[in-house]
Figure 1 (cartoon, helix red, strand yellow):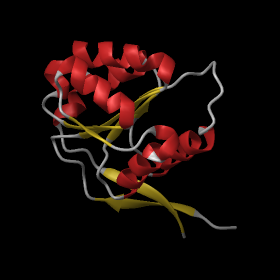
Figure 2 (figure 1 turned 30 degrees about the vertical axis):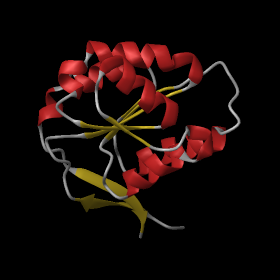
Figure 3 (figure 1 turned 120 degrees about the horizontal axis):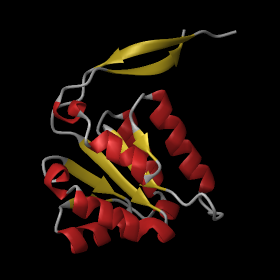
Figure 4 (figure 1 turned 180 degrees about the vertical axis):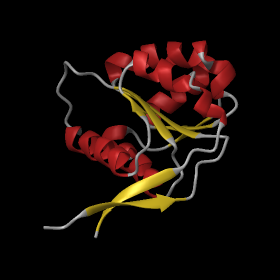
Length: 148
């Protein structure tokens, strides 16, 4: 049996790379959340999946780099940035009560966030805890799981 070990990675910067994602029924909630935390979010670099990124930018005037829509590969693009150390946290307002055709992509994103030990919020309460943490202004040590 292979043994899992933690591999140390370069720490995150003080200016965080934050991915913003929301399922259709939760886009409005994420936009409202971003508006409430705009004073914090504007100090960081924001990315998001297609429509979500566009709607946040239009409604809050926050600059959000848009990737593809989630079902068209946007979740995977964000996952790749996690692997490359270019996403420090994910705020993903997911819809737990609806089926999604790209559910395997969502599960892969959640898994990669675990492997690379980055915070991921799947609801507003967790997102509030993360964004208001004193660690938001610190360089954070990072590690990843790998097999020995």
